[in-house]
Image (cartoon, rainbow, N blue to C red; front, side):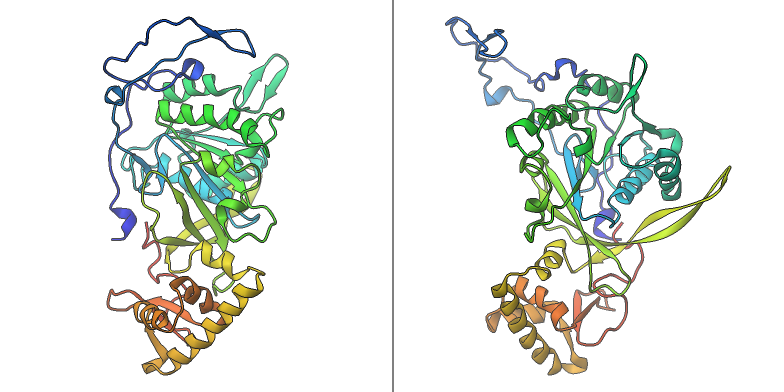
Length: 405
């Protein structure tokens, strides 16, 4: 089985404390109380303030647990950024379905859990509901969230609704708050392009996740800059990527014969960053309704990819020096493979010989598309094979469907 099937199984804390007023996490043991020197007062609201020191020995140590094994931490904020139209919302639907069926490798595998799905851009009746149905979700365990007020309803707003949201999460044992997109939940009074203002919304959300054990996964958009760093492409303040503990970036692979996209771990503060990238395809699914069939997108992971989102973004770079380096590496790569039996070699051999010729691993990976080199997994369970002729499965993907899950 693949890397993702080696998942940590377990169950969430059953008696998570309420999050009233979003107080810091509890510690155990004695804390040092400094001599009283008089209170200071907050310059903004006049409330008394006093420093409190807690020794590190009094902090309760906790292991990292994973909602999705090694990729999405439990009780933390994760972002999924990417361009428009490449299935970001379908990834959330896929996660929701796997969690509500107990099928996601990680903390809740074997134990179906509820999900709160906060979406503002799509219709529940026409889009979100049918997508969840097509993804195989247990719709009894997926909850739309609205805020009731006199005379009508409002959408969930951060940070205003954090306290009540935490109470609901704890009450029904929610494992995931899916925010589609996260930016739309931020109060309109907060400038999302100003770091300090944005943190006033994100940091209470992070404390909510930590205290309840509920993972928060928010979708984000890439801006239109030519930057090749996925973290720097996220629309809004840098606080989005700084506060999130994990970032799963996605991009469409223009070199894939099957039109597939790639998901890569762009940030992982709590775990490994060298996780294999995954490849997925989007197909059309028909969902029966009382008024006739509805047609929505459905996402399927097809396996691991030897091309990452960084590779794809770098190929689109307009930097003349990077283009020249890529062209030079592509010329060397073509010549090297031409001289090999069947015009192919293992990726390890390519990297070793390329390094001796003065090319880095990243340069060679970016040169693959320019040299029209295809890659496939070895038929004998070995590593990746690079070839000048396309053989076997689609470019960059394992042939076994679902091998990565």
